[in-house]
Amino acid sequence: MRKAQVTDHEKARLAALLDHLEKLLPDADQAHAFRAAILTLPLPTARFNPLITQLAALPDRLASLGQAVAWCPDAFTLNRPHPALGNTLEHLLGGLYIQAKATTLAVEVLQPQPHERVLDLAAAPGGKTTQIAARMANTGLLVANEPNKKRMPALVGNLERCGIFNTVLTQAPGTLLARYFHNYFDRVLLDAPCSGDGIIAKDRAMLGYWSPLDASHKANQQLGLLRAAFHMLRPGGTLVYSTCSLSVEENEEVLAALMRTYPDQFDMQPINALPPTPLPQAIAARYPTTLTHMRRVWPHLHQTEGACIAKLKKKQQPTLWAQEDGDATTWPAATTQTEAVAAKGTIECQWDFSLPSTGDHILINDQRHLHIMPPQGPAFKEHLPFFLKAGMHLTRHHKGHHYLAHQAIALWGHTMQRPALALTWSQTQQLFAGKDIVLAKPISLKGEVVCRLGPLTVCRALVKAEGYAVQGMVPKSTRRQTLNQLSITDADQISVASD
Image (cartoon, rainbow, N blue to C red; front, side):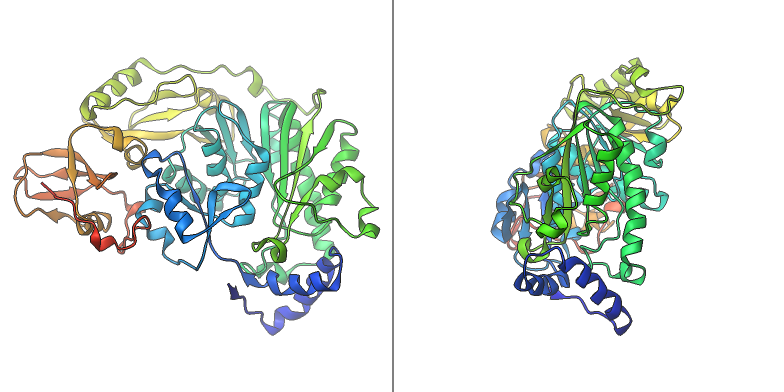
């Protein structure tokens, strides 16, 4: 672990913040340990994405490099910093997400299930969203909302990289979104915008404005979002409220206010993933006893960033909100278009494989792409003013030909029977650097092929007519001048014949 440096300008505010948070701890020993841990950058955590089934052996490799996270079976805290995780082949294929250990807990508490309707109300940059989608096995409906336009590209990029297609993306303030979704979702995650007082080691910018008064102002915003989230939850549904703040202002105060807004309309649920760390009695006495079900992730106790998490279950009484024309509960689900069925048959025949066929998604063909998306996607696009996109694109079509998207290769390339080109590790590195490769001798394959590195299908390429030159089709966002591989000890040991 590495200590974060604190400037003289920040010391006064830091001291005030630490004094404020230490009041929540039981004794001086814990306060001392907390002061050391809150300024220490935790070791990185990598979460395996089980949707990329061709990387099913990756958790064993991650286990050899670190320790499993107790509350998240797919996450591993590495034994040492690894600055190049984003340049690994496994990451670029969508099999890895670099995510703080503390942030994985909220989704595990939410427990999303396949075929449900789930809302992630403040979704960027996408760590929790992709984790939810994996728990849903890419089925059902996952609405990922991000009100901040500047944060949207990161969310879109991570969803595409991880092969997520059960999503509808929206960009709206949560309180406006609630006017269209009335008691609708089975589960809602609100990872609320907050002061970030639990992540000082990673981001000290909040020291420029933090004060107890500022935390109270944040709490007003959080309560508005939490009221909207609770309204959009169906009766009997589950809501998880989480922050990366440790203060009572942004946690207990917000939940106590929700109880006053919706008296006796929800139950606080126990969180068994980690033991309780009770507040001192004088502070705890200010709040309803049911709030003891909340859990704090303390840096000195859990070796990660600070966080606070609460789980709510809505009772059977629906909540009321100002309604708009186009209430989501009345929007019809669409079916796969006739032209999309034809396109599906074309690509399945070309590559000799089968796309998944369930009632949880549809195929939609437009002027440029064949998309896979939830059945609600077209209706949301037509009726919801905050709609951005639905699902992911499978192919780009041009002059009658369908070109497979890179994420389609990552998801299903290993099931494609033909045609395929076997690569060496150095050839794979060249293609991911955006360079063409020249084979030692001509091959019989011509035209578009999928490329394999041992058991992995890694990209598409175009074999030129003479059979020597191979042009890579790795998208620009996925290219890396230095490509690493996490799943083996020595990448240079890979040697696969290229003909």
